[in-house]
Length: 303
Ligand code: CP
Ligand code: NVA
Image (tube, rainbow, N blue to C red; front, side, top):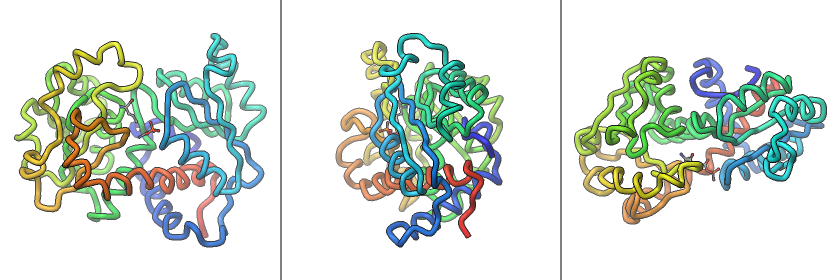
């Protein structure tokens, strides 16, 4: 595995190895480090959008694996003034050992990977958020065992990056995915065709929740969509995750949120706090899962 650009392109064997390795790294965190696959390496984090979890988990993870991290706000480098991504990539490719990129266009991450020649990680684009979904799968499986054959429901903006990564994960990991969203916010037909797998779209959130193992939501206004906020809040208001939906799911169903959460919008405060244990484990697991990704990109496996 040379890059992590999308769940769509991530093979099952690599994904499984990442999840297994994440469990070991989580267990061993805090013990004297015996695994430093990034020793002597400097990784660049190039971010064009805000971040708390992704930035901190990568900066900490890179250092814990023996490397060093260089955070570059895209607006502070010439990229923000129009220097082409392929030129930025060719410069950084000669100076750093890997790159973690959060930006708008998926093509930019793909171009960076191609022109830099160094391992490149998609830390969120408008199209996918693969690091998030790896941590989510890890969190589900550490609490409930294999996700194979289970039913996951995504509520809200079913056309967003996180939803798309869930769509690709469904076929790869062999679970059923329901997307509860109004028309216009469901995954595009082309994407569903590309992904295959058992993915059903619902307009009725209650019907979607019935018997589910995991209820999942994300913000209604993703980064870059702020000008559509009023319309989105109005159209998505019926898709809030609340106690009534949880009651329709399987007893003991998990509730997850990739965060940041907007209480009273995609989830109500009561439901968020009732499931905060899971949601913050999910946030913590970003660190363990991404360390496993980095180790795999560095070509190292834990002994
Ligand atoms: N979930 C997630 O990616 O969070 P950040 O935007 O804070 O990185
Ligand atoms: N869909 C959200 C995810 C944030 C982690 C966004 O793109 O803003």
